[in-house]
Amino acid sequence: MATPIQVKSLDHVTIVVKDLDRSRQFYVTGLGMLEVPRPGFSFPGLWFQAGSTQIHLIGEHAGGSPAGNPLPEQFRTSRSHHFAFLVEDAAATHARAQELGLTIVSPPKARPDGFVQLFLNDPDGHVVELCSPAR
Image: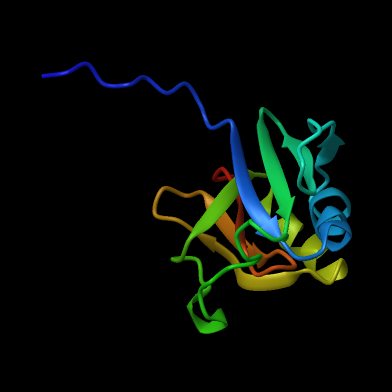
């Protein structure tokens, strides 16, 4: 049997967005990520840091993919394509997300292992999970 590739960790997630400024508001002002320098690519984008993971946004442009979540809205649920970030307290995060006017896909609920999950939509309909360990 061949030796498997040994991945170390998730480095980044890339998503395509329509409006970089609106997405910056969501990821920086809403989720508290830090905007970090991005190499001088020939296409528009922004990079954000969340712990050791980065989110790379690519602005919709000719030659790239279309922005947004291709799933129809009724299929954007906690069981659809998504990426997740660890937060201190998903229930408190839910209250703050409501105050900030963020789009809630699914309110906090406990997983079978006790973690609590909250699901949001970013401005382009990407499903973002925010989860916290059992208390």
